[in-house]
Length: 300
Picture 1 (cartoon, rainbow, N blue to C red):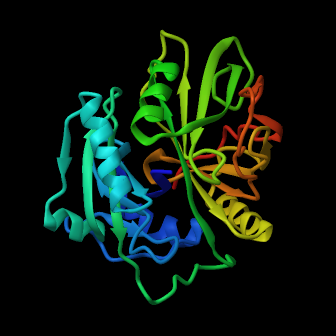
Picture 2: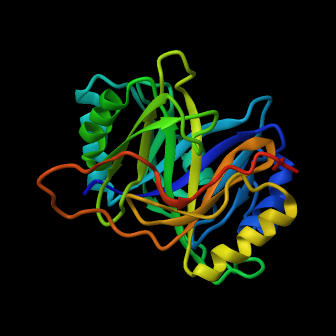
């Protein structure tokens, strides 16, 4: 195993300051220290930050930070990328200090998403104290990206990160991903270790904009944590879907829109990925129940 988890994510937001209240008041994530560039940072565990939100004219993904199992794994990933003809950049000492890691590399994937792979994550000895009715976090679960060619992108990350495919999803989408309709969408779920998936790659119809962050997933420890967060998000009028359970990883979750519209999946109770399987399951819908769109919700 080369990659053990999604350690952090950098977001761009037209309302970065809004995350200073949305993070603690809705997600239960306490604030960390701002980045050197002034990004608002939020914590999930012992890391100094898990989400970093930078003020921008646009809303979306800035970068994803992947934690290698150790320095040898980081070197292996770098060698794999070089062998694939991908340009990599070593983060400077100042950048590593800002990311709170010992060393890291940066590269851009074929779909123009920026990724960082790091080793030697720094920790804060003072434990994170969740805000409100939240007993604690499992951590950052996964990133869900829109891509123009899911099979090709899946192959890229299988080669670069030595990931495997948990399962695939092929369904018809309507006006939103949470409504049935005629638009065909294919999703690949890729993983390493015990996680069901670290990365989801969705390809929609050719005439749609197959680029952008669909959501970032955060997982909590207790079902009540999820329920209290749903109530808080409902009070803030930023809920995008009802509660629901996904068909592949069995995760119970809801979706909310962060300041600027960035989607967050807030989850509990997912099952681990398959250790070995002779064939890759393919599902024809994303949820067993729930995840119904709430169209009147707005972001505040």
